[in-house]
Length: 239
Image 1: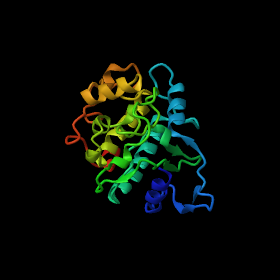
Image 2: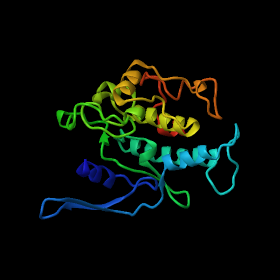
Image 3: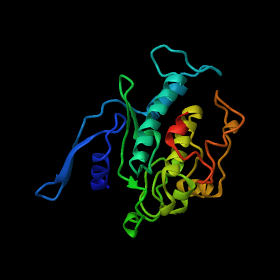
């Protein structure tokens, strides 16, 4: 994963993607890479602060902290970075709030490209490494036939259909991140095996079933199980 991340990100030059300057192997066999230092906090921390600031049914106003407008605008700029990667033939495959960074002055970074791949390359058995059973925490990245983070992965990732994973898979994950922003909850919760099963079966509850301040009547585009009917562009998701 380390070598893959270095190779992939070295070819991506975008303000929302951390540039890798160089990488290699030390004489003792240890891998290394140099990249720009990233300072800030993860989007998950920003989301938690946003929802902790909610009073009754009102979103927080601009008082120096995060507001719904600011966080959604941050999300939009993160989508631009993912859209750029897609234009370069790269799919991230592990988009989640913990892998998205926000700097002190509003700069954004899409992090952790260890599971990324070119979507014009077929998956091979080499990707099916690591433990065969998923970790108990569905917000943690896992290796094996099911690649990604269960709570934010697309149905094709949950099924292990790695050759079907492409830009639309990242768009699903971005929709899941947007849902987390709006409701403070991922699309599906529970132990990883149960989460994966629910995603495969399309048992994703509507946002309208949540009890958060923002409860629209429909969220069909934000979590559609059919990869052929999802918005296929990250930039379109941002809109």
